[in-house]
Image (tube, rainbow, N blue to C red; front, side, top):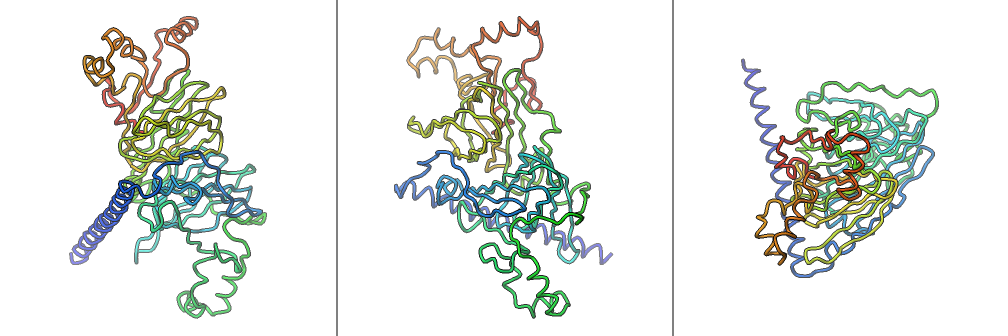
Amino acid sequence: MKKAISAILLMVVLLSTTAFGRHIEDSRGRERERERERQRGRGEGPYFRDLEPRRPKQLIKSEGGEIEEWTADEYKALGEANMAAAKFTLNPRGLLLPAYIDNHAIKVVVAGSARMGLVLPFGDRGIERYVYRVEEGDVIAIPRGVPTWWYNDGNERTELVGIADTSSGERPGYVQPFALVGGKEEREFGSVLRGFDREILARAWDVDEQTVTRLLESQNGTGIVRVREGIEIPEATEGEGNTFFGEFVYRVKRSRADVRVERGGELHVVNRNKLAVLEHLNLGMTCVKLEPNAMCAPGWSVNAHKVIYVVRGSGRIQIVRDNGEQALDTEVREGSLLVIPRSFPSAKIAGSDGIDYLTVLTSDMPLVQFLAGRNSVFKGIPSEVVARSFNIDEDLEMKMREKRCEEAIILPSGSGRERERRRRRKGDKDEPHYHYSMVDASNEFLQIDLGF
């Protein structure tokens, strides 16, 4: 009985501590956000003035692979959105050494496959270890301070893109990695173990100092190394998920698209309803595939900044400011990364070969409003108000209202008449043109359920 009461009290303390800690972090994040708003109001320097897409700079290149990052120094919009981004390339037998970072992050496998290890702390109860097999299209949520390692066990190159929310860190737009192992001469990316006296580590591990020296000085590489042939790396062992966080991996390619549009493309939403751990990270994401010349309806995020990474193909993105000024009109292609601030309307149009892109958002339940299509905000405003606001007659207003009356979010290329002729030629006039799996039949709340 006493043990049961003690266990209950311990659980209450842990939950209270977790809730209090998150409250403090949220308060600090809100204060930083308010300070940036005050600076903006005082006109202290540019605020989201430069949204031009960027390419990353190289941090590490070795036989095992490469690490690149986008920095707030060169792309100020990342810092202003409190986000950071990096790209990791693992060659065959490349091992991304165990490390943790000081901010919550999402990583996406954009090419190849790998084994990913993740270690969770549970106080004096020990640790929980997971080894996942991840592949192209998989989304991995990584809480702050949780060590991970990655190993490419295939014959092809593996590419990962990591995007982090830095609002709880000390430097907006920057992530601080803490390596658990690393090269003996490396300073910038050296292991945290090197900061301890060897006598302290010897006592902690209950070994002699010569053993500590061997442990710290045997590895010459840093960041990413190549494992010798014949060395075995643990196979995947993931189970039912941790009782606190739940699962950490969402497999997009094995899931049904939330929106699928004939000759338009498809959209996968990954929010806290799909991956519960995102509620603790306050992050969400979408994966979008647009067919040639299709577009995502112009719209804006109600409650989240966005970081977009182009996985494949090319297209065009326009972003607009509050005063109607064009903030950005640019061509994007594979490897481009850009920031779309909260409330800034934007449109994405695929090129002649189509475009695949992913978006990470600073909310685990992002909301969005649209300017065109079935769920356009103009459909929610009385026609008389729209007509008077535009100073047009009601016939013209009705013409605008009737267009795209059956299409939403992803808009196929061509006019309505052209699309209808194509369907009739194929004899598929009565086939469903859209599929929405996350909304009710009326689709009245599409902009809420499919925020991206």
